[in-house]
Length: 542
Image (cartoon, rainbow, N blue to C red; front, side, top):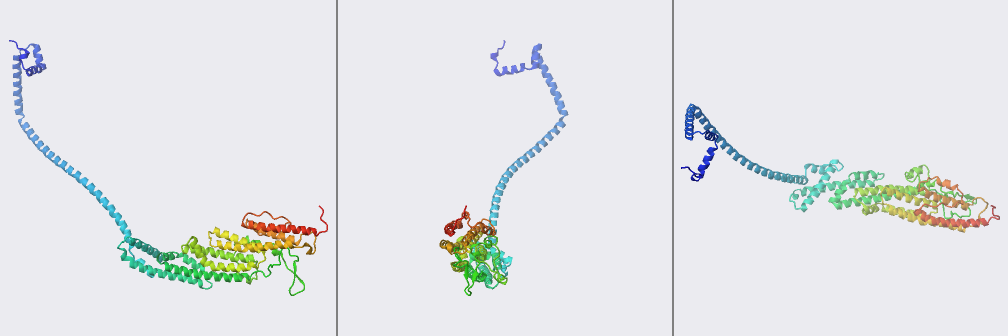
């Protein structure tokens, strides 16, 4: 009975298909071999192969046993290595955690270190500024104030005093530990500084003392006064009051003596009220003689070499009275005025700068203190010059003084010293009215002048016209000197035609005040020329 495919289970069929896929089975089926025989042949071959394998195995039993032992040893070694590696892996995991912990600890330690360094720096600075060293104590107590070590330690002491004051406001308890010693050192330093400064100020009172050397010494130690201002104001005020009192008297005494001796060097022959441009007779009878004495009126209306006082000699050395008296020299008033005020200018500039530097002043404070020092001297000058100007009849001298005042004011502005601005304005206001009055008196004299009362009328330049020409040229030349002309300009101008019209003045305060005065004088001279022309019997033919 033939079997069908449905009679076999599926797994059997799969097995059969796998066997049929074998090459030997396929070859045997294709060759027509009986499968049973073939199966027995295969089994016999397998039995032979098995027998040979057993024999070979038995022959290699020793080697197999040795290999087995080696494998077991290797397995044991690998097991131990596995245990070691597992332990090492565990250790590495622990080390990673420890490294992270160390990193975190390092960060914390670094923050602590920075905080401690910052605290140590501030604390170290705090301690250094708070502690009073032995060196400071010894120098403040024993070293003379003129030594460099004393000045250095005084700076340090001032810093510590200010630091302790600042910390006291913050309620730092350590301030109580050094407050007493700093107070004692401060009082000792103030006492030594006061004695030193008072000694220097008292030296101003000695006759023939060069007070500028003492001022230079005080400027070298200007910090002494700053220390007094910062720590003991009533002592600083005592020093400044003593300085003001001493220097005020010193300058007053010096300039009073200098002015008195200087005015003795003025020329004895001066212009008087009769020396006007329209005077009719240039000669005057002597008081003790019946003969006439001729007076030289040239210096009343001409400039000559007097213009140098606002030119080359403007900043020349001051006049030394005893040297001038020894050589029997005499000077015009404007030269004495220049010398007196140049001495005032030089001393004022130096004094103002000293006050600003030593007493730490500026602006109105410096000006007020300067006025306390120089006020009496300036009042002395004002009273003396006011008395002189009221009786002065030399218009050219007054105008030269006006120019001197303007130029000295400009010099002080270049030196950036405004201390005498009010004084220069006062001088200018004092001189201008008198100068105006004198020019008007010349104008009035020319207007009232009668040409018929002059002797020797001829066609030569009339004396009044010569005086007018010289006077106008003198004033204009002096004004030109302010823009760079030399003192020789007046001589050249005097040689010009006497009837020439005055040149146009430069703009400025002097010009604005001078122009109307000279215009009135010119009108009076023009009218005089008309009257003079009528005195001639025949007019000159063209």
